[in-house]
Amino acid sequence: MTKARKILVVDDEAAIRRFLRASLDPAQFTLVEAEDGATGLRAAATENPEVVLLDLGMPDMDGIEVARRLREWSAVPIIVLSARGQEADKIDALDAGADDYLTKPFGVGELFARIRVALRHAQKADPPDPVVRAGDLTIDLALRRVLRGDEEIHLTPNEYRLLAVLARHAGRVVTHKQLLREVWGEAYADESHYLRVYMGQLRHKLETDPGQPKALTTEPGVGYRLKTE
Image (cartoon, rainbow, N blue to C red; front, side, top):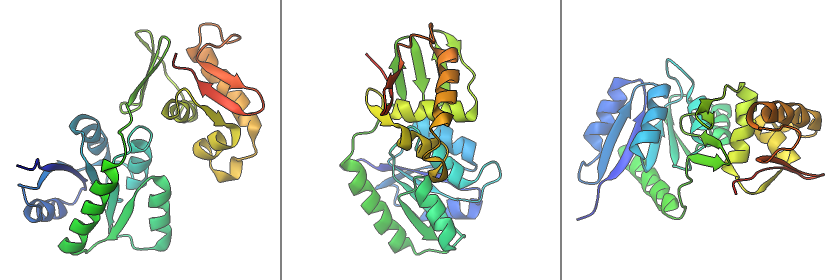
């Protein structure tokens, strides 16, 4: 007997959730529901869905931000279901990490086809571990928590984004340009002084000896690496 595939729907419209609940065959799909972005992110971390159906307009945070946060630690396929049909909205969602985009109202047959494609693509990739450890540092990308030993370390949003990029590529060198693009955006790709400032701040918060960093290492002229050995 084929196991039902788990689908997470993150949408504040109860009517859409009811429609999906009625449309998805329970023998094929198990539906997990979240009515806002924060609940959706928690469900993505705890329920391990195989596909996320994501609305853009929600009361607590925009779906673009949900997709961006989810992509900090998960490769789960994201299909946006939104009443926003403008090209700019689609581009923003795809740039934030969504894999597909359907404009409401949509047909059940097309939605099922998009889900099948997403599941096929997901089978080809190994899911990343949302918890990264480097020495006495623990970076939980799902919960957005950073610990040094048992102490939780507070990071500013940009400090956290910088660390999260390094954690997603743990053990590998991440170039200056890649870090600048992923943390600050394409317009900042040549602003290397941003990295020097923020890496200094991260090292002071996370390293025992910021002058001799063990985890956040420099690759001269190339970039930085989070060492996990």
